[in-house]
Length: 312
Image 1 (cartoon, rainbow, N blue to C red):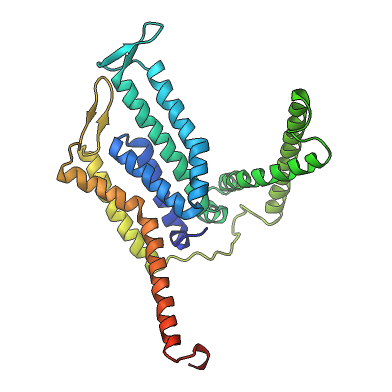
Image 2 (image 1 turned 180 degrees about the vertical axis):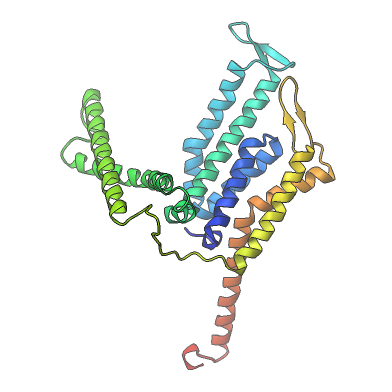
């Protein structure tokens, strides 16, 4: 599904994801990470639907969170609050447990944000932004991002074809299933390499990356994009100011130090600004749906009043 924010200029789309993912990775404050995770899930609901988002979170995000949360206190033993001792005598500390939970939330939020990124930042947008600056790298990155969903579709096609000849991964004993799986993977890799070579030859024949080459683009920076950029710049300025002042600072070694809790006016300003920034695409889409709903209601009322649109 394409939302309202996807129709904005690609530079704004890229700026948005750079900020939200960058803050998620480099600011390890629990409130900031909670806002990031909940906002990413909400935006994913809007883009992909509830069922697909829950399936993705259950299959990838939640297991990754559990693994990180459990592994960190087992291998990192910093902290002054000792809960107990492991079988090898190493301390099991509260600080390492809390930091493991924080890192798990960061990883889950980053994964969900990148899933939203792949829906909004299509390959043509990426090439539009970076095609002239780094043509070879932008082509490779756009191909990699495009091949991920294509791999999944082609894998299903190959699996269905092999199943018809009795070579499915669900047929035969364990040895035959492994052989069938290797065969399917080999076919998929061969297809991917051939497709990549054909794409590279096609782009080379069209003069991609040559000096003076022009390209058609449908993207124009208009007044609406300017207003959105101004709003985003103001929010980013508040975030930078708040982070520099330490209103969203958190430390877990050797002891837990988290600023902004309990909330202060300054920390609330930073957290609220980041929440508004993260939910900006959701608010745009909901407002656009509200406007369309009102327009449809007005059209219906005019039609019920005796006016027929084709006679106006």
